[in-house]
Amino acid sequence: MEPSPTTGGSETTRLVGPRDRGGAGGGLRLKSLFTEAPEPLPEEPKPMEMSFHHCHRDPLPQPGLTPERMQAQRQLCTACAVCCVFMAGEVVGGYLAHSLAIMTDAAHLLADVGSMMGSLFSLWLSTRPATRTMTFGWHRSETLGALASVVSLWMVTGILLYLAFIRLLHSDYHIEGGAMLLTASIAVCANLLMAFVLHQAGPPHSHGSRGAEYAPLEEGSGESLPLGNTSVRAAFVHVLGDLLQSLGVLIASILIYFKPQYKAADPISTFLFSICALGSTAPTLRDVLRVLMEGTPRSVGFEPVRDTLLSVPGVRATHELHLWSLTFTHYVASAHLAIDSAADPEAVLAEATSRLHSRFGFSSCTLQVEQYQPEMAQCLRCQEPPQA
Image 1: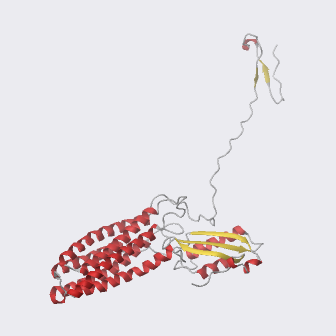
Image 2 (image 1 turned 90 degrees about the vertical axis):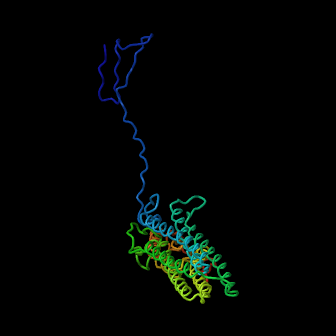
Image 3 (image 1 turned 45 degrees about the horizontal axis):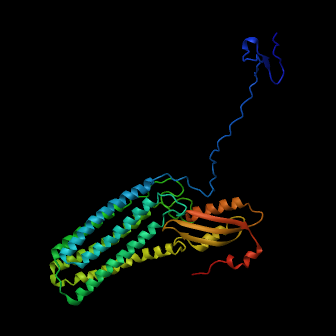
């Protein structure tokens, strides 16, 4: 006799008949007919959508160069190749013509090559992520490359100035006017070609809040300035200066070609153009030293940044304000914000960060929010630094 299944219980069992009996002892087997629902597996954590005011304001950068920087890389590579070819031609032509003025122009082209090579190297390094050793990444390599370019130009120019001084003292030299005229003419054409390659007809199209460069923004504006790649613009301005120098050498070569007795125009023009070459490096050297000494960026003032932070609702005072730059266009800021007890720290942090990004174009902002204490007004470490 087999009992019928019971209903209404939490578990239903049946007695297995003789045909289902097994084993030597003829024991009974019970089989559970109730299957419990499996426990749900824990869901994998999904990436949280960060709000706009989070510290990572821009989307995660894609590997490799952006289209704007790839265009800048192509322009710089082309201009650098042209510059190397014509620099070698000027060295050979200057040697054959015994012209120091041609050599001076070749030295200026050498500085251009060094500058463009440094820009290309920095573009390549900018694709490398930050590491635990290089926490800021490799941005400052551009500044070191610019410093090396300036130092090399000064060394070569110093040697040429010495040789020009010796020529003026002894006058025992001969200038091949024809070779000098031909070389100077080619140099002018080379600079025109490089200026054409580096010329940017209009601003490149970019996406994101900062585009392809860390270009500073206009005060009170929330959009990037319509500017092209910084390295390309700097190289273009430098080539324009080389073009003017090449025109001067061309004028001197024409004078020597038709009036060989005026061969002193060669060392005299070497003096003049060497001074121009050294003078053109002064702004770059000043900017390089400012970056390496971690000074305040030239286009960002201490007072405007401080006033912007104090204008954030809830901020009573600010101290430990530091402004510096990793490159000529990559700005960094850090500060302590003393807020009222009733202010929302998250809201203050979001608003302060947003204003620094939109008004000054800081690439990185580190702000510490703390409660305002009356003792801060007398604290020496909380005082503003004096005027330089």
